[in-house]
Image 1 (cartoon, rainbow, N blue to C red):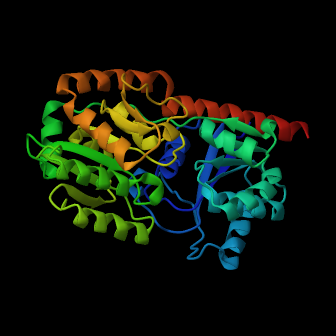
Image 2 (image 1 turned 90 degrees about the horizontal axis):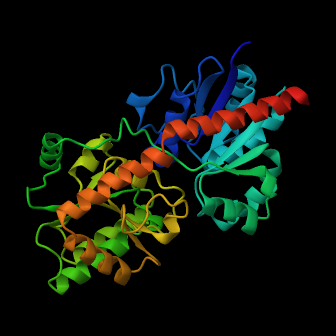
Image 3 (image 1 turned 90 degrees about the vertical axis):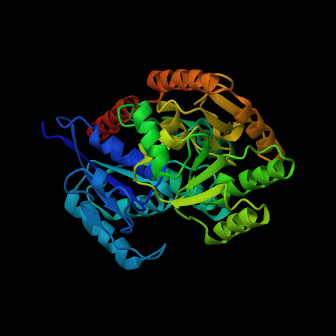
Length: 381
């Protein structure tokens, strides 16, 4: 029997956890059972070197959120590809895909992956009305499941939770030599303490609060002289980026904070870090945290970002409740007071946690089981 075709639709392949997730999943499909095409709405690409051969097969070249011309290209691509399953990612892809599927024949089964639980009010309105066009909606965390079912009123039997995972072979502990080389590459001295935020510059990620917490500690003399904050990620909100930079200037933190932009070699960045900070307003099974934990780097996380239990506080890192300047300052004080040996112990336990529950191999198996359910339903219809 010929393999079933999966048609992946995503906004772009810009740097981000959902984008990484799609590529990792596509590479791990059983080739005897599935083949795949990747389609992107826009040509922004961060993962060019990691793409499967010949992908993305379809580029819609959309420069705006709603483009009738690009939408027509999507319908044509679906008609040409004739997939059995259309698997969409992120808000734009989820919207476009569900609408386009109605213009194809035969209509593919539609799987919708929801990676974010910070939907705008307008998109929540759309999601309520589009949910019925999805044969199954994948919630990538328990917090997303609660949003979809409890807040948006989507039928529970339409929603399936599949928590994220990472590749532990790609994200693995660095050797002592690799750590030293990575720290030198990022301009870190042997006694510097490197805190990393691997996240797009956006209000959701709370970079501004971290910088305000650092400024408070510095003003009181509690910030170690060698403390360095590395901000690695694309700018998602230019207005917020200006606020973050203004906070750096106001706090006199020009020597302590470094803006790295998008970084391609993430394993080396984790190798350079002593701790990863993720005190976000909200996250869904945060991939950057899982990558760090897989590299044996302990993580500071907010309770709102830890709904899937990616780490146990005190065992694999630290957790704060509500993310505020005060709570982050208190956590940073505890982190820098933690010995290197204790942090190493946390890191080793963290990797074991990832290997047990949060690998991309487990994610791929979960998705292939869901694909099989959709294919069986289509055959029985």
